[in-house]
Length: 305
Length: 285
Image (tube, rainbow over all chains, first blue to last red; front, top):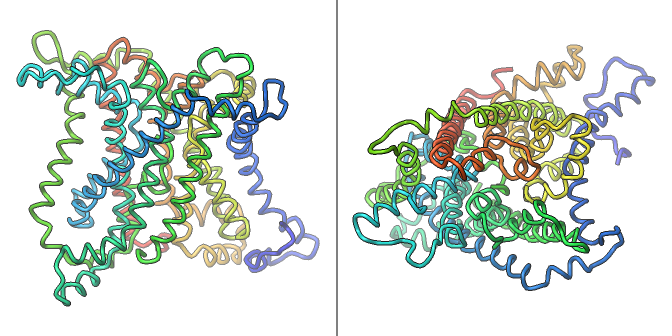
């Protein structure tokens, strides 16, 4: 890959040196990149390789597909199914509600206090949350939470009459939606900003209504961005761990919690690499989703730029 | 909280766009009533849990008190963990800047054929969930612990990887916004060596991008739980989680404080972005 002399380098090469100094200066840029490549190799590429290779080797480091076959056992398939269900439900709910909120914010001034406040708050809730959001919901609708107590004392409603759902899948769905909506706002606002006012004016000058504008112009233009954002939300929920770890302390309904089980407890002989196989499964799902996301982003960029 | 796309953390998106568009955009008149209805409904949904945290953390026997909030500074474990998290944030920012700035600059200036590869590597952590990364990195941390001791500060090594996608995007955008080649050529023709070009020409010109990248990194590090907890290091989030089992009001109080702190941080970031957007970047050079 060093064969081609880049034109920029030629243009910016040392001006005052003879042939003797040219060679080291050609290698210099690569030397500058080398620490970066070494660093990411140690802390990113090699760990990934360990996971991928581990998924296909047995306890004695012989290649095998047995570990991956264990994943097809019902207990792991169920975990993947629940992870996918959780991610899909919260991605769709988050995308629809988040798009609505994004629209409400976008309709206001571009540089206004409301927009600034909402995007900053969305950044916090979408990314920073994790453990803290789990506690927020325990304080809200946990056993002695504000809403739980209020409903019980004033309206006589017991929110947990059907079991304590907060610490199980329904609770995960609620808290995940709470951080998916802000993520959607962050992703979708730039897409809304790409809508040109001229399109709306064109519809109006042709006698079209607001509904017709969204039905025939705004909606179709935004559709790829909306679907792409939904996929992104799916990947986000699928890889999330902190909220679930803080909320669910018993049992491991979803894949990240299953992996926690393998990391924190004794593993069964012959299944040493099962955690890696689960991890590899997660990488495959996220990679597929993110690839589709990248394709849709390219499609969305056709109009919204 | 792992796979967010590039730029998501950044509340600067509006500032990154040319202001011309906002001027060209007329106010949408018809959205009035329903818009406020939507905003109020979402406002209640999002503020209720935060208000509940405040309520929960100020409960006392027969009234309200701030005992849980006072306990934050009295709890030695918690203070130590918060200190660790802040130190990690600083180390991560320094490591990130040292790692990304030269590489991103070189990718723009001298190694354009490596740019796609570098971008791919930098965005890769988005596809590898933190929970999976921790599985693969555990053996490497055996070595890190051997070489650098069993300090939670060693987490900075892997945190630099976690912030890589955001940091790279911010810095890459910053470099794209200035006329890097002309600036570098000018500096070179005046006799500056490459390290000087980097430190005295490139860095001052992408100050805004560097501040964004740093703030985002700080927010991510302060919120990190997955890797710290599974490598058995106590940072702020891990300690909040452990505390939740013993003393729920205190951990709720810290959680709320941490969320508010992150909010202030990102709000400040949105102002940094605006200043950069309006003043024009190249004028600073």
